[in-house]
Length: 274
Image 1 (spheres, rainbow, N blue to C red):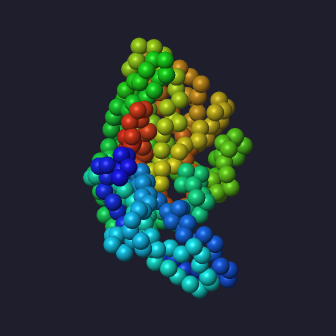
Image 2 (cartoon, rainbow, N blue to C red):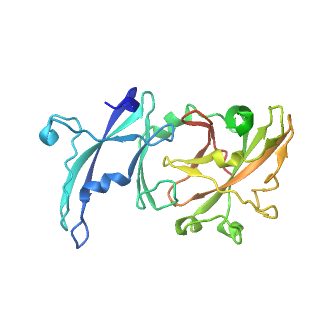
């Protein structure tokens, strides 16, 4: 077993695929490549390929039996193994039609019963101040007191004219504005760019990175940008806002996470949605 899989627990995903089209599907065995089994820490599990010395996999608890191609009207059942860290539950299964969960594509989601309740157990409450690790580059890693201020639903009309580099799916999505405040506990001025590490966490298990309006004149209701290109003196605080596009109409924001420097996983708050 690979070293990085030690301390993880295997989870077995069994699913059925049916070709409802009129043409043969080539490379049907690659269908599982767009699945993600998401843990209650909002991190996708590691897909595990089992091989070696077990022809047909008949004695395995989860055997990949997908065919190479799939004719019209045909179906197949198969199983894929995912490794999640010990103590982490399953939040959801997602399938991304574009193959990339972080690029705002079309997503299908299957929630897992009890997943959101388990994920809630480790979340800070809205308004709680927690310390997040931030890499201040030449000044090293600082622990900044951070507080989730608000999560607000916006409108696509708010973003007209802004250079946010949105793809087609994101332009049709719903923007949510996440505001987090930070206090500079270091001995020097702090450059205000922590928003790049904020993630909007959805009920479906997605981590949606933010987009920042690097325009000093941008006037977005509920998402001020007056912190852009500023430095914060020692002891002072700043509130930064980032824009997160939810592209799945059936998905909803649930929490806000901060990706820390030098540590896996996220520090997260339950989202106070407005």
